[in-house]
Length: 185
Image (tube, rainbow, N blue to C red):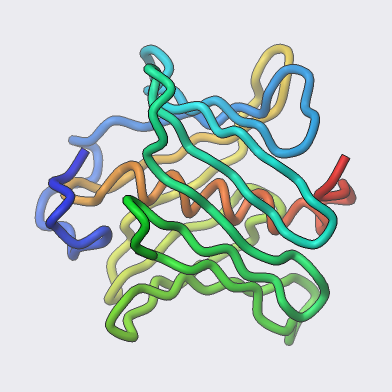
């Protein structure tokens, strides 16, 4: 993972295939939005624990020792579809669903300092990329998994892997309605 003082998203300077990919799996008995994030291939890196309240969404991303690494808080109601990602109490990214201009929803990731990461593709299909300053910093693809559902994330070098993975979890939770699944149990 990148140094915490470094920006969450940077312009990559190395080839993409030199960095590992990750698997994000939905919990085997999904109640809410619980996930397990694994290195591909490898072991578990993070566990995502969701707490669904009627109008507010709260997810906690924990390391393998149970310590909170990221906290995601937001509202998933109609026009106020926003999830904010924080680390150590500081908001580091905000994922926002924008009003649809086409058949599918459009999303944007807002960073501190008025910077943005573009979401190109369709998160509901788990087929999209995250673009920062014209460079692809992550690619998400649907993948078949035995006993469950999930997706693969290929992160470009020099990115904060944890923040990128937190953004993909936000996009997955927000796009659940598009896939015909409710976002609450």
